[in-house]
Structures are given as structure tokens and as C-alpha cells.
Length: 460
Image 1 (cartoon, rainbow, N blue to C red):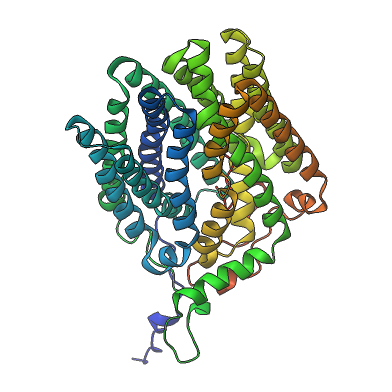
Image 2 (cartoon, rainbow, N blue to C red):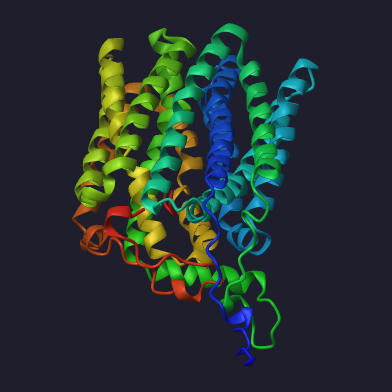
């Protein structure tokens, strides 16, 4: 009997591809939907509570500032933590903290132990915890897409649909709860939503999902793990070298500031002065969200076949200035609803495109850090939006502020579109990041153009 040659060592055999599983994507999207819906409910309940109890647009703006400033600041410095600890741990722990803080607000109010300064403290804690939680869920989207073998552009489109669904359901639930049971009911729903979102991430996701990345660039010469600030500088250096991402971030920072002013102060003041009340806020937010879901679904299905730059700026043309102008003109509710439908439809195309651009240009092991920095820069004006709008309305009235904000929105989205960097949106679509091979995580090969993929800057 002749001797057989020794079998090839198992270590040299190519690793088998893991079986396809849609469970990670379903879990991440479910957690996003639950927590974002609660946040959208709170976005109606909290301003209305402050406006009803203080009668001050300025105080309403202060509360918005106190929630969003910690959100932006904490999120900016959370990227290395997410990359080091893993997005799953960061997501469920921060959502649990948000649930506790949000639940204390109605409890303390019911006991008569909620002075205004303590409300500000609770709101700041919620905002500070939300930033890392939102970032962690965003970072898990591409990994979930890999496990489900879902094209990246479709995955970002599904995340956009989830966000828009939350924007649809949240205002409807929030407006109804506030009108029937008062604002504290909406804040209670927010606490429950955070708790459920934490539970989904901690329990429902498959084992191994959302683990920490260990990129080669995160190891020093001595073999010890790189420190926090080295990881932070690495993400900052990458973002600084990307002119398209920087240009997008600056433009979105301005529009997000104006959107924050619109949502947190201008719409509630318009609802009070027009006599529509919280039901009007819920109605406009709901129709805007339904149309945004429709736009996001279309973007998820066919965005890879459309010219990105053209669709992106057409979406902003619909989503921006018309909302401000129609409220300033005192148009009938039927006209307001029509304009909000068109605005929501246009906005549905924005975040899927932004998310696809981000995932194409940023290596996977840098995604947490670059996303954190880009999001924070894009959101930097959001805390000031409500504060400045509240002061401006107090000084000059609602209508001049609405018209000024609408004009700034139109100028920003029109002029910035003339910069040459925007051509890279279409010219480089489908190209994998140059540094992708350095990631310790398995990366896709260059995607098929038909299967291309909220990115660092996120349009609100």
C-alpha cells in the first residue's frame, strides 16, 4: 500500500465564508427604530412642556441647547471609545443610561421635585448619552450588511428608511399623547423606548456582532495598544485629507443649525400662534415623515442608478427653504401639508447618499472615529439653532425669523454646490477606500456598481 501525502495544514486553507444572516441587520434597525421613535416623541413633548409651563420661546431654546450641546461634544470624542470597546457595548450601556435619565423626568415632575435647573441636568445627561448610542448603531450598519450580504448602498438606504419611519411615527405618537395626556406621557414613552433599544442590542443581536476593531495602525512600535489620543488623531487626520467629506460636513452643519431652529422653536411657536397646538406639530411632522419614508425607499431601490450630485441638491431644494416660507406666509393647513410632503420626499434621498459616500471613502477600522468627528462637526450648530431662534423670535417675531432662515437655507445649499469637490460624488462611486486593506476586519472587494452603498455628516 502506498503512503498518502500528508493533508494540507488546516491553517493554510482559505477560511469559509460565514453563512448569510439577516438577524444582525434586523436587530440593528429595530434598535435604531425604537430609540429614534422615542427621541422624536420627546422632541415634541419636551419643547411643548417648557413652552406651556414657562411661556418663553427663549427658555425653550435653552432646553434644546442643553440637550444637544452635550450630544455633539460627547459624540465628537467617542469614536476611539467605540472602536476600542466595540459598538455593541457602547450602544446598550448608553441607551440604558438614557432610559434612567428620561424616566426620572416624569417621576420627579409627578412628585413636585423637578425645578427648571434639574430638568436641564436630566436633559443634558440624556443628550450626552444619546451621542455615543447613536454613533454605535451607525457603526454596526456596515458589519450587519456584510453578515447579511446586503449591498452597502441598500443598507444605508434601509437605515434611512428606519430613521424616516421613526420621524413619521414619533411625531404622530408625540402629538397625540401630548394633546390627550400631556407632555409627561411623551417623556415616559421616550424612557421606555430607550430601555427597549438597549435590550434589543444587548440580547437580540447574534453573538460576536459589534465587537471592537483591532486595526494594525492602533498598535505602537513596542507592541502595546495605541492610546486614546493616538486613535483620535488618526481619525482627525483622515477626515482632514478628505475635501469632499469636509465640504459636505460644513454645508450640513449650516442646514442642521437651521433645521434645529425650525423643529425645536419655530414650529412650536407657529403652532401656538396659529392655534393648531401640538396636533398641528404632530400632523406636519407625520406627513413629512411619511413622504421621507417614500423617498428613502426609492433611494434604497434605485439610488445606485441615479446621478448622486443632481439628486442630492434637488432633494435639498425641496427639503429646505419651502418649509420656512409656507409657515411665514400663514398659508392654510392644506397648503402647509402639501409643502411638507414635498419637503419630506426630497429629504428621503439625502442620508442614503451621504451614507454611501462615507462607506466608500472611509476604511472600516476608522469608521467610528471619522463618523464621530464628522457627525459632531455637522451637528455643531444644532445646539445653537434652538437657542438663537428663541432669542430671535423674542426680539423680532416669528415671521422675519422664518423668512431669514429660509433664505439662508437656499443660499447655503445653492452656493456650496458650485464647489468642484462635489464631482467626486459620482466620479469615485464604487471605489473602495484606499486604506481598506489595512483593516483587521474582512472588507468587501470593490463593489459592483449596481450594488453600491448616515454617514459622517448627517442631514436632519
